[in-house]
Image (cartoon, rainbow, N blue to C red):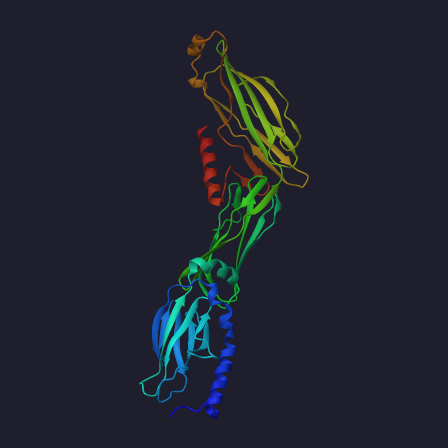
Length: 422
């Protein structure tokens, strides 16, 4: 017998179905026309049967009341559950003015009920559904930007003895669970991590939760730096998404005093004459008061030397101490390192060293050089030391292009080894 549409039980059932439809209208927040879909796959679900499609479990919970013969306006009640426990319900109908045949769930899965069979002359009601998954290669950018907030917060300017603290925050704005997230970045030359740590974070990101990644950097010398982007990779339902922050500019102020040595060597009448220039330069952007100390080997005779100097060196300026030596013994000569201490108006202070210089007198062939020219022989004009100047501050030691504490140890051992060889 065909059901009576005006019967009270059916009207009550219909009322709850309409209410259920209203409560689930949010499922259609993402328009199917705005998404590029993969080709649909067809599934047949008997009453109570379920199927898993790309991490979504779709189950046929109930059907409209059966009649002696099949009718064209049947409907089916479906439940959809993600593998991270998010769930939805929807009523789909065929030839219905109340219930649509198609719904979009989670912005990622579209279900169309192409056939619903409920007649009492069959073993069990069933439905034929077509399930489409969104094409992530075309929709992931806008979808992920609406689902995740990702930012980096840091200062734009610091002084040379300060740290720049960096906070990276990722927020899950939706009721979905990212089973895996990975954040990483790198530093440009001239910046080090302080304290030393790995510049990556990995874990998961539950729905409506935040994750924060913090690190701090210090500059080896003043200047303008560009912080590289922080990259974020997220995995949802086995699909990877990628976001990144913009570059950040960091200006580091302060003095940077550097010392270098140059020398020239002349051989004349069995004696060696060495002219030495020791140069202190301020390569930073703040003035510094510098006290300069130049040292000479004990085995040489000093025939001319400027007094040790002290005073204020402005940015991009320098001063020089000139010395002249003579030595008669033919053996290798080591020029000791020169030192300078400095301080600025903010209280930042430190010391620098030029490093030792080896003058190879033992390998200099005076007879060969005289045969080439009757003039006094001059070699190694304006030779600079191989060692870079070493900047030491009251807070830390800065050794060339040091990027981490491990690099600091390695460079320190190299300096000790070179000193022992001398």
